[in-house]
Length: 179
Image (cartoon, rainbow, N blue to C red; front, side):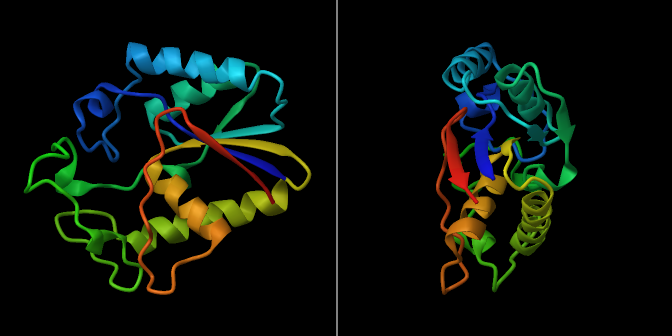
């Protein structure tokens, strides 16, 4: 399987550097333009199946990037619920999410943030299912940084200390895996 992981296009929250989580925000005009550029870049790829998070920013991205494909919405790849942090600034000292939230062993979840184990379990369940369903296929998944981080760790291996190293993927960037 050729797996293409795409992070959704830019939103106003991305522009303002605010945590989005499950807040359902559409693409900004810049975000839509980014998606059209990515669509041109991936023009030669025939996607056999396209999956998206149910959040509008991911759905819009999927529809622009793969306009001739039917998009399958799967709730397991929705962004992590960031609870009380949603809508707060990255720069706000009280709004910054600390690294305890990304420790699988600790599974820290205060302030209504979804525990990392819940995110990890639902996303890895999704990946295991599509690996079985879509062998020898080109699969596009449009989702969010949290889910992409889990998929990257699932494919590349977990750190021994259980802390998921958080790597921010830029909006409309993608990574391709051959599984």
